[in-house]
Image 1 (cartoon, protein in one colour):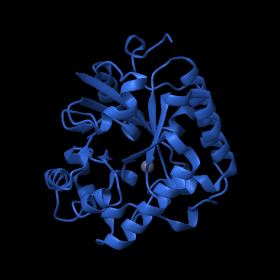
Image 2 (spheres, protein in one colour; image 1 turned 45 degrees about the vertical axis):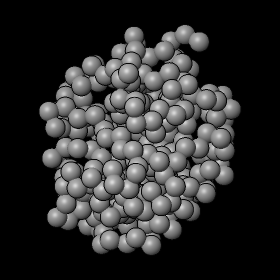
Image 3 (cartoon, rainbow, N blue to C red; image 1 turned 90 degrees about the vertical axis):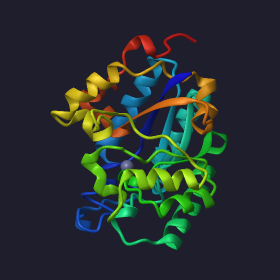
Image 4 (cartoon, rainbow, N blue to C red; image 1 turned 30 degrees about the horizontal axis):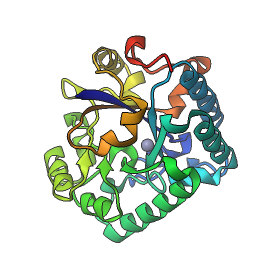
Length: 271
Ligand SMILES: [Zn+2]
């Protein structure tokens, strides 16, 4: 069985590495207020709702816990869980959007952040919570694997196995070393889809020329997981999964009409 797992990261503009969480890329002066969502994010929420209404497939949202400081965000999460129910599962995308592997190793800091983030997200999403983790910005180093396992996560989906972003595996590391440490810690890794060892997810979807490659790659993805399968299969090692992702912010493109490049025949269109 080979299926596609649709995942969406809920970063606002204030979270991207240029604004927050990276030792050299971030300019803290532009960090926004936590309780306020950007206009683009709000329009992304509406675009997402509209897209969800147009099909029946399930998705997993990866949420940064500090998003819940916004009342509007919390209410929106409540509303989509009420409306879409089991079609939505929620994993953890950090307490903040700190790019952990770009900083010196900090086991206790990372452990505290993951514990707090899990609590906050779980409190807000209840039964839709899953102990699945995606590192902010895809910054994951081998030392992080043990912490991810010890804080109760069963799935990691942080590896973007492209040579282009090898630096994100931390100084002196590579994706093989990260892969190995995740495996040794007993966590299931769900790497992101690549094509020709190049990124085709997230920012690559709208960055020429990777955007062209992304469309080619996404045209060939397998059938989407059923709603029932999506509840458990990411943590089931016997399931062969292709993982793709984009951002809620993407849904604000094209006047709120942006869609991920998934062909209609593999999305479930009936009940
Ligand atoms: Zn992110």
